[in-house]
Image 1 (cartoon, helix red, strand yellow):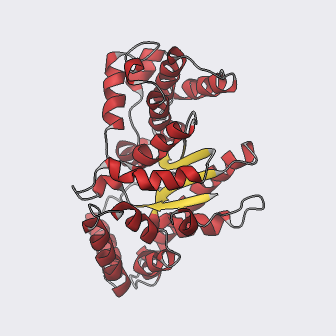
Image 2 (tube, one colour):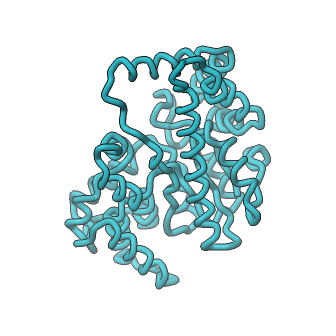
Image 3 (cartoon, one colour):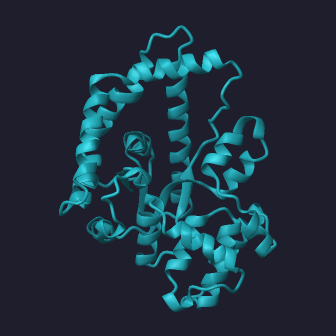
Length: 320
């Protein structure tokens, strides 16, 4: 099990260009993962949360792609599309045709699994990337736009999966612990002020300086590798704790906002790791690469290290 702490590439400086990821991808490929997990909500969880809009409307709007168009094109809702994807993969041919891949890409889009749809798309030749077999012109345009975005799930996760001959990635993020903001604007402001005050600390300032320096150096030779080595250094999880969650735990608001925040954070990470463990349990012997925001890395590794049948790999060694 290899946990790769990542920056969110959507927020990287304009100096960043996807080809800069090649040295990182080369090292990850040399580790030979047989499964890849990304920090994305599954289509099934998004489908479930849509049924509880009073709590999750903002979560769905922020983190869930709308599968309606793909559902109309395939005639499948999200649960049915997930079941169909599993059925297709269980009988997947050794040498799938382009028609098979386009069809599975359409099914994955209807299932709310855009990253896995992109894996199938990337495994097609340029000449084979066109509408057909369930992918209409609108879905092709949506998938192409999605693949051209700046996102570690696509540029690292899906790209590496396609390169390694994998058929999908696994969406393991979890936002079921999210709660809607309360109705009282004064309480919302008090919460925001309390957390912001907790984050105003020396460790947070150190991390901000480090992040700015790494981001400014992206265009240098090995700039991306330098960033990922720093994000996966053994000292980073404790720095992240003191900058963020540890500071929140001791913030003094009478409402104990910081403890609410950390309770949410730990619950989210536990459920993310449970999703990973579920996949590993279904496929014993899997070498999984999990790509996740760097602040999650220490929690991932701490929780995964409690599992009887999981062995953690050292990201520092992989990224040398």
